[in-house]
Image (cartoon, rainbow, N blue to C red; front, side):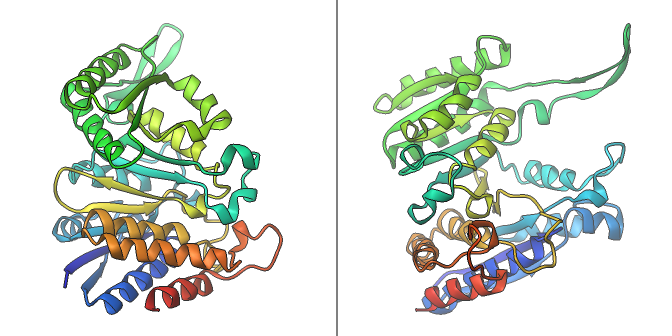
Length: 358
């Protein structure tokens, strides 16, 4: 039996709706397999700003530090989108990642066979795609010095991209270990033909791979070429590792290969402590409260939580099989229904819970 405290961060928009379905599925896993999961709910994002003016309240950070794992919905929305605002919902998420030292973001891009035709790309390009992205999450341009100053041509803005050797080594090692358990291929993405930061990235990654993982098939691709290859030949890639900004852009591009953001989970991990699990889509404020959001990405994020933070691999596979079975049965939410009959958020959750419960 495993005992664990799972911190729920519903956040904004559709976050509360989808996190509730993720909680229900995890609860069903606990009941079936004899585990004790305690759920603690805390605030983050826009709603936390509205209440106390802080997107990451101290009590939320404390709860996350004490938890075994964290399941997040989404943060942000038009209400808090003023670019001149001193406090924005996304700051809460960035700060949480930094405070918990969650340096590695894992995003699996998998084309579900039942939904291949929902992709905007041709079946022969998408069918069989199985890519695992490792995005460095706590360094690079998003965390470098930034600001504004007066220049000769008026106001100027700057954002500094910085990576240190140790930051590159740890994310490359993590990605390489994952490649060992998959198809044995690792692709590193950079912009070394232009950026000094990328030249260091390439040098360090090459050394780590040659010295520590010589058995892995290793290649380097420039980020602009990778953007094209993701659309033209995505099946050629197994594990991909890259920096923060490049990973942010490429994984959003790759998310369209399966045809819907509502199907893709992600995990943010550190060397120790709780991991953070979330769907890759946003808060979707236009459909919040309507009960039509797709909860499957959040449910699959729960499967990643079971696998990576609680080391319950069989239970993770149980959840993934339940989701696949529901899709095999032709059940769809509005985003993947292609004009056909669609289920509500709760009804889709009911089906996965029933499948897990057996």
